[in-house]
Image (cartoon, rainbow, N blue to C red; front, side):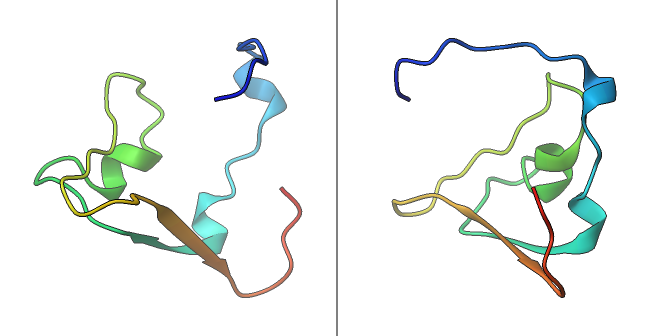
Length: 66
């Protein structure tokens, strides 16, 4: 995506806001769902086998600056 270089910023610069949102995935393969998407282990990931486009939706109950 784009031509911007990837940057590995220290994790201490980030705050986990995932608990503030209500998450919905367009689809997912069994054992590769939301828990994997939110897991800090980079060996785990979300996989989707549904129709394109694949997306995740986050709904917050109040304004959240990201």
